[in-house]
Image 1 (tube, rainbow, N blue to C red):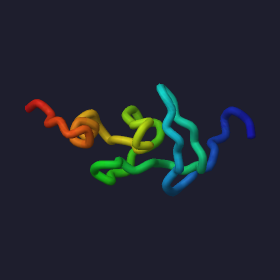
Image 2 (image 1 turned 180 degrees about the vertical axis):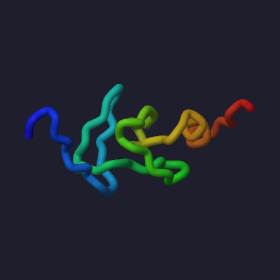
Image 3 (image 1 turned 60 degrees about the vertical axis):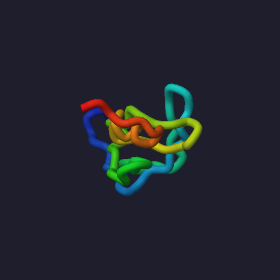
Length: 73
């Protein structure tokens, strides 16, 4: 495959190990699911996760909801 060819898009849900400041893809896929809302999160848009709970979050509001805090309006 040369640099101008597109790689085939991997479909389905990925399995990810969440680390401090990074994550490791255990099983390739296109997305992970938010631990709060169950919305799919494309891997290239994944910004929020919990190392302790090993789950991803779609937004900072979802993180606050999981941690028991209410987001400010």
